[in-house]
Length: 124
Image 1 (cartoon, helix red, strand yellow):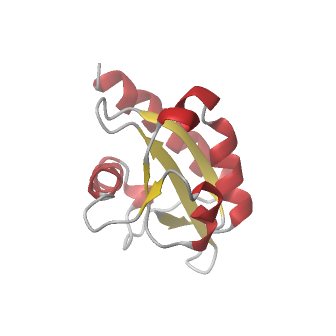
Image 2 (image 1 turned 120 degrees about the horizontal axis):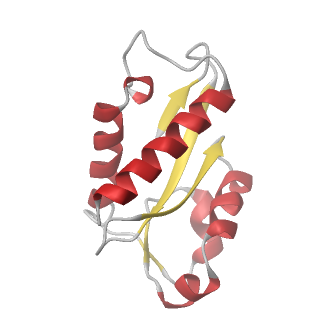
């Protein structure tokens, strides 16, 4: 999912790892849409989950680091897309077309972190 800081030209990408059965967010990373940001996300996921999990992704090249467990199929990412819609509805700074936006990357990250904690607590 993308958002922006200060102006639309400053795109910020939000990467989330979601456990499908419990709908809990396992980890997140904020940055650009590069392999480096994916590695930040990947590093926050525990090794136990990495060994056992199956990952549903789109065709973005950064995901080539997880070729063995990666599945690309239509409809495989519907849970995470629904989560992004919930995030956009709950917090206007993440909406695509809005006059509300973050003025700094730090505030965007803090807002996202608070929302993730709230969301994970509400899925208990």
